[in-house]
Image (cartoon, rainbow, N blue to C red; front, top):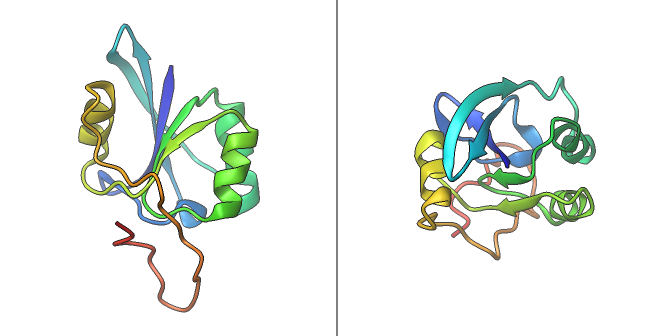
Length: 121
């Protein structure tokens, strides 16, 4: 399994469509065996799901995420857990231990100047 996290400064970045970097984790037998960075190369909302799919990602952890991005991830066969905050490494550990605090109803549908998509809990 390959898990990706929207990433900035060691934390889960709070706006999927604006993420500048993903941290990916290869998981075998319930343990992280390798991590590396995925640069989405300035692809916007619509292309990010395809970028992740092309890198073999099967699961995404993120903060805020809009309905269009959710649909694109579903279409790409990528499971996602939105509304997550905190350290990215800890979020992956929590996911693997069935302890991840996420919001299955997370939405980000009100974009505007200065909007960060944080706090959608």
